[in-house]
Length: 117
Image (tube, rainbow, N blue to C red; front, side, top):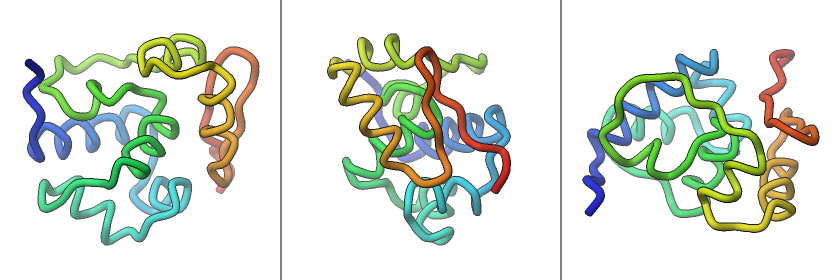
């Protein structure tokens, strides 16, 4: 059974943001939440809704397990196909989720968060 906890979410989210070069401001804008909400998640004082968790996974190009379980720290950006496979959703749905986020673009193989914000 997976070991899900606020502490895991906080640590993993903070690490993934740093690994992806995303500030609280940029990521909160991309997924459409306040900086305060994102701060609660990164400090272990709250957790995102299912919809926001999906948006985090898309924006950070990671799986729910990457966010919610205790992880060894390594960079692990996934291709859109691999991300969709791990999340058990159709590739087109993954592309749709990703393209619905502002300031984010998707190409055929990978997701990338626009550095020009």
